[in-house]
Amino acid sequence: MAVRRINLALQGGGAHGAFAWGVLERLLQEDSIEISGISGTSAGALNGAALAAGLSCGPGRRGRQAALENLAHVWSHVSQISDNRMVRWVHSLFPAPRALQRLTELVSPIAWMEGVTRIFSPYDCGPFYSNPLAAILREMPHPKLGLERGPRFFVSATNVRTGRIRVFSGPEVTVEAILASACLPSLFRAIEIHDPATGRNEAYWDGGYSGNPALFPLFAPDLPRDVVIVNINPMLRDSVPKSPVEIQDRINEISFNASLIRELRAINFVKRLHEEDRLTGRPMKNVLIHMIMDDFVMTSLSAGTKLVPEPGLLGTLREAGRGAAERFMEYHAGNLGARDSVNLPALFA
Image (cartoon, rainbow, N blue to C red; front, side, top):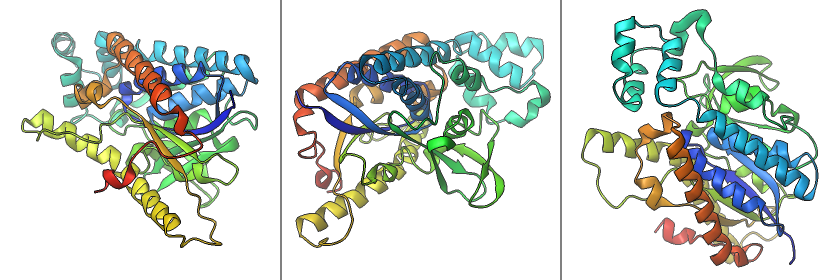
């Protein structure tokens, strides 16, 4: 079977990113699929880092196995920041009286987390602060990032000062860049990284605010036309949210899908120009868009579960991701290199 080169666009979504873990496991089993480019944001940047660092270890099964080991390492360690361990970790950020600690350990970690992050800042804990994701990334079995070999990897973060997206690539992709992309400001201190464009250290927050994920880096001429988006945040909900929790959940989904929808709308516009033969002599790539998603599973979850990576939830999402990728390979793999498997005009009708 001929090898089909694809790009992956990995959305962020906290603990829900375990869905993409399952998707990537399934795709790595396909010798006919070659991953040439990766764009990741937040949890998508974590998945992308594990994937890119692993695939850079060598061609064929060697690189694929290394990527699988990295992904298993990341999510097994993320799952340890859960339940009462999550509560104790947050208590290390925001010291509280012992009686309050005992009380909060009796209630839902999700409810407690949502409440405490409205009152306390990660800057309130002084020298006790730590970001648990840093050690997880540095201790991956195959931790080298920013290498020239392997797929091209792009990581998006949001500049706090300007509100603009910054896309890290090549040797710029470091552990700090991944932490910047996954920096929820209610949980983590902004990550400061030097920006050669401004000549100063800039502070960065989660890339989901400005590009979730950024698609435009994957339009480079040397990358394939196919962009496979792994969706974490549901794009459609039939019911109108009415309770406070449902309303906040839908606001979260809309906000973190906004940048992706803008890029898809622009792609749809370029496709119409191609169809009308109005781009003769203009270097505008006619990319092919595909999606791997499971809105049934994702709409059954609340946005609050993104903050609590409970092992059972991660396992469920991993299996859902594997199933969604299996269905994609069965029904849409034949579209790769030939046509879109997403009806963009219908999406914006």
